[in-house]
Amino acid sequence: MASAAESFTPLLLISSLLVASWFCATEAKSTVPVVQGLSWTFYQSSCPKVESIIRKQLEKVFKKEIGQAAGLLRLHFHDCFVQGCDGSVLLDGSASGPSEQDAPPNLTLRARAFEIIDDLRERVHKECGRVVSCSDILAIAARDSVYLSGGPDYDVPLGRRDGLNFATRNATLDNLLPPFANADTILSSLAAKTFDPTDVVALSGGHTIGISHCSSFTDRLYPTQDPTMDKTFANNLKGICPASDSNSTTVLDIRSPNNFDNKYYVDLMNRQGLFTSDQDLYTNKKTRGIVTSFAANQSLFFEKFVVAMIKMSQLSVLTGKQGEIRSSCSVRNSGSSYLESVVEEGFEALSELI
Ligand code: HEM
Ligand SMILES: *[C@@H]1O[C@H](CO)[C@@H](O)[C@H](O)[C@H]1NC(C)=O
Ligand SMILES: *[C@@H]1O[C@H](CO)[C@@H](O)[C@H](O)[C@H]1NC(C)=O
Ligand SMILES: *[C@@H]1O[C@H](CO)[C@@H](O)[C@H](O)[C@H]1NC(C)=O
Ligand SMILES: *[C@@H]1O[C@H](CO)[C@@H](O)[C@H](O)[C@H]1NC(C)=O
Image 1: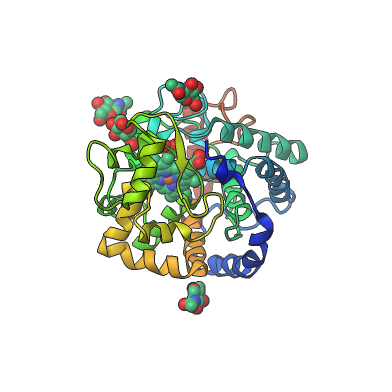
Image 2 (image 1 turned 90 degrees about the vertical axis):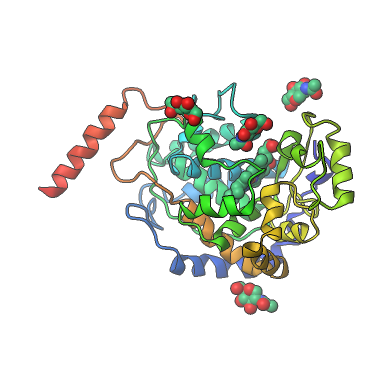
């Protein structure tokens, strides 16, 4: 696997972080509305240490395996895009969930990411009791994955509840675009989720860390080579993936595969984006200028990324008495049922009216 890429150098990043992160945290709070039911201080009295417990533990995990940061960031993205950020992706039985055997191969999430989340849940519940949801833990872990890889630090609105229904294969395929999607497809699909072109280009910058399997991009190599791909880059990829179904992986950002920075956009300007969904953001006139501006100004990318991530982390969340707080992230609490939650919600709504 990407062994040359495993050299993590946090010290080099610290100076650049300090300036950008404070700015982003405060800026974002004033520009992104918080949806009803979530708040910036949700666990202030019920679990004041939740964020420090998660950050300390992830520092340890990433020191050994920085690649897990990418796994956690992607898991949060998949959670939020399919049925909202309700932890449904974490449930056994979800398409590409922890025990799903026939998940679409191009959606494979890292098995370890699921374990890391449930381990964090155990640590947090040990400290505070069952008051913090798996979906909140995942949102915090994704933020820490960005920050601990060298990206911006920012506050995440909290108070999500965990859903009772796993993500079906259909909902998963309908809401997650394939890597061969072009920019127009991505723009219109994400517009339906309230993301503007700047959000789309910023969120795609998540591909500044992590890896991909050959099958996700070999359509650009075989049978004919995508003319928008740099020739040397294409030849190197053919070496890594000699056939379209080769079983290896490669990094998403060749310049700095483990650092959360703006090099992904520099890759795109050099026609070294791995997926069509990446490279076409530079080909397409509607997004090209945004790519160029992020490649030229990392602070600008960080600022827009934070705004888009906070937006994403609030998609169709469950709050208040909806859903539940799971006592294990991969299974619903025993006794909970879909019907029960509907009845509970109905009762809530009724009592509010009264
Ligand atoms: C435009 C829509 C997107 C498409 C089509 C897409 C597609 C993909 C694909 C095909 C992979 C590689 C899977 C594999 O072969 O192993 C991947 C990996 C990844 N994606 Fe995306 N993605 C999109 C948006 C996002 C967003 C919004 C984020 C987060 C903000 C994100 C974060 C990641 C990360 C971190 C990885 C690496 C995962 C790892 O190393 O385990 N992606 N994506
Ligand atoms: C899933 O999608 C397929 C193809 O669009 C359709 O035939 C099938 O009925 C759907 N299944 C469910 C449970 O919605
Ligand atoms: C996954 O890959 C299969 C086969 O390569 C393809 O038919 C399917 O459309 C892809 N789905 C997604 C969501 O990428
Ligand atoms: C393909 O990858 C899987 C999982 O990483 C591994 O277990 C298997 O041995 C590999 N198969 C081949 C033919 O390389
Ligand atoms: C880069 O972006 C930041 C954040 O928006 C902005 O304050 C700064 O002026 C920009 N720098 C340049 C050189 O344009």
